[in-house]
Image (tube, rainbow, N blue to C red; front, side):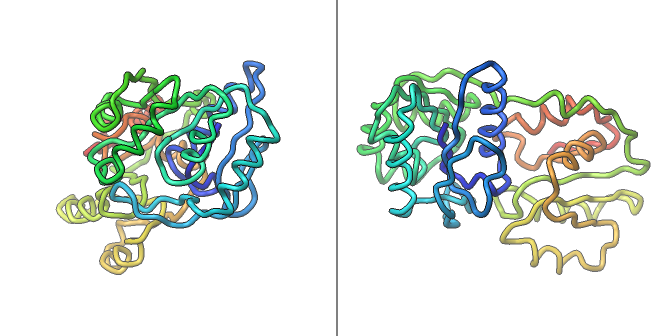
Length: 278
């Protein structure tokens, strides 16, 4: 299983890859995950491909590894391991996934996560279609992701929604005593935190806002909200803390993109009183 994004940086695609690998291992299949790692690998069964480089893509900053050193590590890993099947995530992201598809030493399954217009598909459509033609099975995490890939690359796609680790939701906790909104996502324009903060100013004084994660807009937004003690900045939090807080409150400013976080919220059992999905 190959990730284009750093596995040591929190992210939806990375979380899905690690959780999927864990679930497949429980079924008795040996799985190894290849991907960039900024620091020690976050789990066992990972082959690190070196550090990532923050790269602007799809309106976001992604921790990719397009450098030559990472590609040499991919080539070496594929040669040494002789995998039966390759499962590449975000197959046309610059870096390890494209390299593994071009080499094509095993049958390839690809999962497309991104949705919306892509300049990469516009500028490199012909080579992108050639790379995509080497894939045996195409999957997408949503109808929108499938439309994006099909519109740019052609082909047929099976919708396989992002999974959820139900074991994380077994413990129930009491809901927040006061109306509270939790924001999860990188602090960048595409995720809409600035919009949420502006709207939050119009809410009653007894409403609180928890802001998790970090991003390029963090310091600017912290400065803008320094006088509002209703807003609590949590920084990067663990998956366990995310689940605990999701059971209380949740806000998604990008609910049109994917349903994984929303499903996590619903399974967590949080009440509508303490939930804001925008």
